[in-house]
Image (cartoon, rainbow, N blue to C red; front, side, top):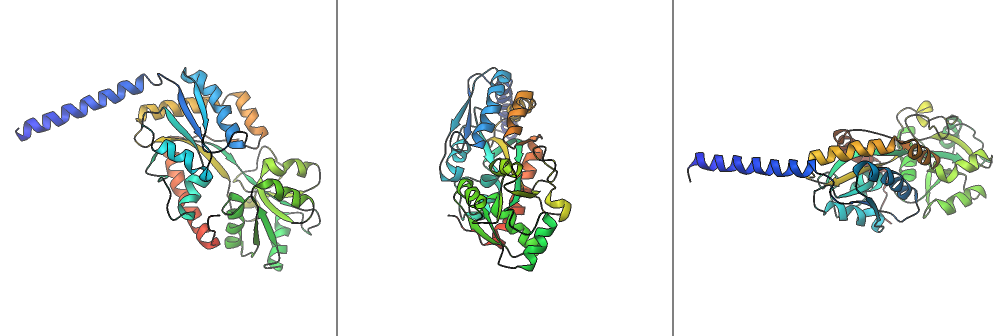
Length: 324
């Protein structure tokens, strides 16, 4: 075959492939979409997915089936979608721990957060909150920083576990503010909150849903939220950045498809996910459990994942955190 005929054949093949992909994308979806949640039913991640999924089913014209696949700190569910066909019929609700912290924490992961997924959109943030037992001699974040600096290695802070967002937020503060707080890891926030209420521990960095009710009842003191802006759920609580600029460490969530998913399919999912999050009933439900809705293009989410991997790599290394 001549070079000219080879080129013509290659061009024809590429055109046919493009036509096939485009046609498949235009008809998407033609069957139910599996929405994998890498965590157990009943938690905040599950609530987020199910709140979105109900409205997405209406918008897509096909059922969005939430499929809980817990295990290995979320890696089982993430791996299932990383290895699924790249056709848009399997998507996953990714979390900061799997997409941004894991690459630095583990020597080897069963998937590559950048290469194995097609980011669709970031969907929500969940700021943590600094809370203190009332017996601690600090009522503002500035006062707390002064107290921590004056008592190196004597101030401990609790979190929901090693390498949790709460843990790494404390380590980030140690690095940037020059404090020397000691970390007390718990297995989840439940027992940590109980110990904090009892005065057995004095400081905790946790999700707002775990502690905000106790703040409002006066049993705990909230001194700062970790988001870049004040949270609508607690607008009276200042951000860390208002006292110490540069510290921002919210948990975040986003939806991804397998790498290679056609761009028109990704665009359709992006648009309908945004519409589902704009539904007033969905907005209200998510706000009630401490979520702040976010939007963005696939390109923006992809760039954000990469920037977060770089950011948390430094913190994980400095903290010396190791997988439990």
